Length: 272
Length: 309
Figure 1 (spheres, one colour):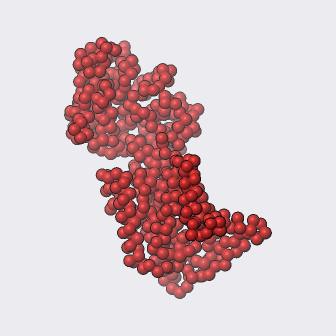
Figure 2: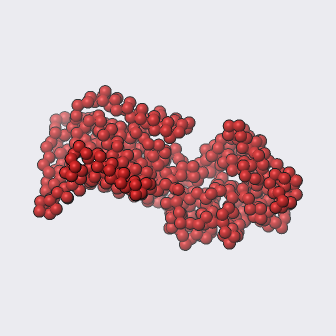
Figure 3: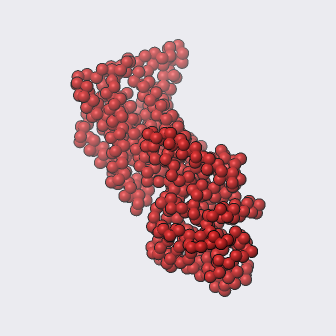
């Protein structure tokens, strides 16, 4: 494996890469007779922006859902920074330090941009109903702090001017940025990004790439599912490749690009 | 005459609105039509009757001394609170016994049919415990007072109890609206109502939100039942009779929308009230559904639908 190599294609990579942020071993998930994820094992190093690619139906989103706790794996283990998270409820996985975004951005459409981000702030005492009646001053202090944090991330992704607008008015690219802010407000150790470039215009895509790289420089690891090969090759290191539920390759951009199994299964003539 | 029709409609509508809020909240979070919600209304009303007897006995027995112009004393207010808490516990037990287990493995239709069964069981058990004869919180007679003189729009008369019902319903609706819009817990409830799966992955404790939805819905249902008993009479069918207007109000307002349930409840109440002098009391329910059909033909998602498309 070559994923500790410092390459021109991945300028954000640094000596911080040590140990495993996400550790996946022999992960399996089936739906009836369909083995959506079939014995997949790989690691995302600490501080990395890792990529997960593969043709449609390869099992990438199912793997994401297993990691995020939306699906309970049939077999295998998942550990986040050394702690087992497989089979745990999504809220517990989130509390353990994992945030995710979706292939089709999912804002709460009737809620404002600020409220959408506030929902992701963890440990708010006001979410406990009794606290609203019996500890209002603590709830108010938590809410003020949460708003400050949320606003800083909204400004960071460039949506400050739309803070009070309902999320339904945002464009596809703006929704991706909103999801990124909502994920980051929880101060996660690892963020799963599901196709952050899908349906985004080129100018906004550059902004998204820039923001991801900046967040990574601050120490957050990423695992990104993406079909935009230009983005994957520029940003991601290492890259895992799945096809028909199995992991068929893992390594840096060059080794994946030259891997004949990958070329046959996914990249085809576009890259070969 | 017009003012009187509007006032009567608002009084009936406020009770329907309180019941419809719980129904629409349950639907938006749990994604099934809870036919047992009407029985929370009936059980809330009868549990308040039980607690009323307890509080009267606690005060030394005898007749309940009325508070000011009202037909009831402090004992009914205390019974209203105690009955609402007991109904919330009943809802939590029903969720634990039935809906929580079924939702883990069943579809919305399974939950809906189960709620049918629960409604029948709860209604028959209520009748077994309390009997089928009508009951009253108080036998005090109330004379309607003139609020607007007869030469203005036909005049308006209402009893103090009716004004109490309208006023407290308004306070509860405004309070719930502020809770949902201004508090962290309310924001979490709205997030779960919009998209439970997304709420889970953003770290919200959805199980806790669901529990509190049952509690709030049952409390409002119990208050609605007590109101219905206060301005009318208590019967075991009180919840069943209100069930269809509740669904009409929730659908009319847009399933999942609390403001919609309130407006829907008031529209259904006004339609029922207007039907009495116009087409006869026997068609009042038909009039409400006529309005429902007319509005849904123009706006099929209801007036205030909030669900993500």
